[in-house]
Amino acid sequence: MRVLITGAAGFIGSHLCERFLKEGHEVIGIDNFITGDKDNIKDFSNHKNFKLIEKDLTSISEIEGNFDIIYHLASPASPKHYTEYPLETMLVNSLGTKLLLDKARNDKTIFVYASTSEVYGDPLVHPQKESYYGNVNPVGKRSMYDEAKRFGEALCMVYLRKYNVDVRIARIFNTYGPRMGIDDGRVIPNFMVQAIKDLPLTIYGDGNQTRSFCYIDDMIEGLYRMGTKKAIKGEIINLGNPYEIKIIELADIIEKIVSKKLKREFLPLPEDDPKRRCPDIEKARKILNWKPKVEFARGLKLTYEYFKKILK
Ligand code: UDP
Image 1 (cartoon, rainbow, N blue to C red):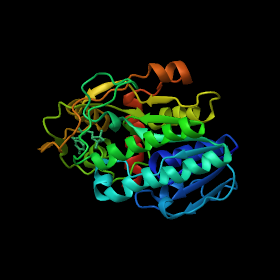
Image 2: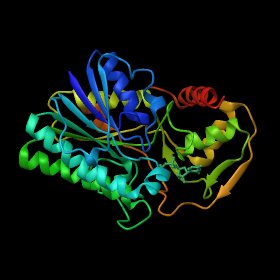
Image 3: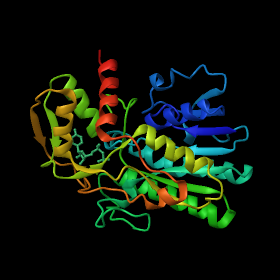
């Protein structure tokens, strides 16, 4: 197969490229490196089946070649990054998504859109099922991301209903693992870097807010199935690990993993920070026969090894 992956040098994108290459497929990646990293693709950038187009998706008028699957992962994805790049975030999920959907429509290609648990906003329903409409502040500090992804999803559904494009929407919940950037700003890389440097763990708010973290290998398996599974046109599927913990508990677990007693610094909770987040993954179980396998302690250990190596 020939697969197009946008955001190829990102955390999830680079792992997805590698997975398709390992299965013997040809991968064309696109990245503009605003939040992607050359280091993420160095292990396979010379692979004979890999080609990188170093461009901003929103400045491309046409993508040459035919593909079997298009994955659209290009977008700043951490609160720190989408706040730094609000316009880029909105445009890559709107204009960028349209460009790729037109390509998928013309070439009759499967299109997988990387959406997010952020479409549920600060959810009032737990756990979150795909049928939940969400509780999003359309003009809040996270709206450039939440609303851009919601627009991207809506655009996918227009192309499904109007042009019968084989779109699939993956709602990706918090994911962690090797290749997250040290400046990513999300809680796991922050805590890892702070632990290694003997700095206090920065806890926003009182730390009672929850998240459910999925290890990257599990996420990649889910995404791989989203693109390669036959006859799932139009499906919208949560991908994530339903193991829900408080951020304060995460700090305790990380202390155990790194075998150090760490100080804690309590900082203000960012505006519109969701209080609880946990995926209902029944749909992924049924449709993709998928569920996460990597235990949290093991995933964190692997992630810790990675951060120790890159911070050496
Ligand atoms: N958080 C924290 N300390 C940090 C970074 C994040 O307490 O150094 C909190 C953040 O307020 C949120 C949760 O951890 O409640 C997860 O934040 P992250 O940025 O990882 O991702 P989000 O799920 O909010 O997109």
